[in-house]
Length: 209
Image (tube, rainbow, N blue to C red; front, side, top):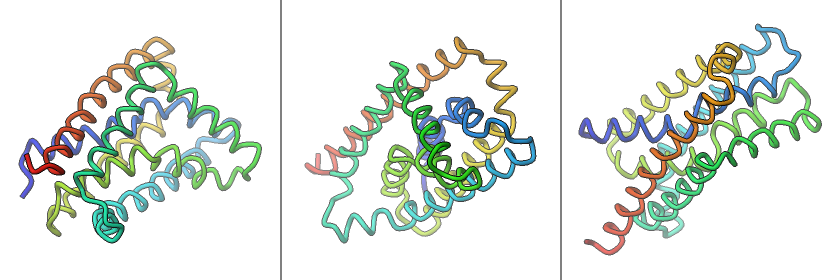
């Protein structure tokens, strides 16, 4: 059974990687002109689809790595480096700009009814960082009950994200530009520390230290 520390680490990693407060202003830009009901439908559908994607990676991510001949140690190192890059973007305000560019591109290319799939569910919610974090965590939750716990954690974080999207307008108004910048940088520093820990665990695993 996972220890309380492992559960807290999984919760923190997923929460920081998904970054619900940072997604709120992007969601507002993505759904501009929609009614409250339409926004709720987009948020719900996007959250459900993203949960399904991450749940699949939580269940089968390690097996896929095994089929490809990639050790969990090697993936922890690679995934940790990727998460560190995401944390770097968060600290230096580059991730938000990239998300906003993605949302603007989607409005001109895709029909508004499909934005809950692209770009909301993928790649804004279940992006490379979230998928990497899920596969990394699945390596520390090996048993069937452990994986069920991990999926429960993902479901909990997705519920938090959905609730955040529902109050995105109020949250964005409350935080303001300064509040968002402070919160994003703080979460970025936490994610940087977590990503370094993943790399260290990967090195220990790869070299049997």
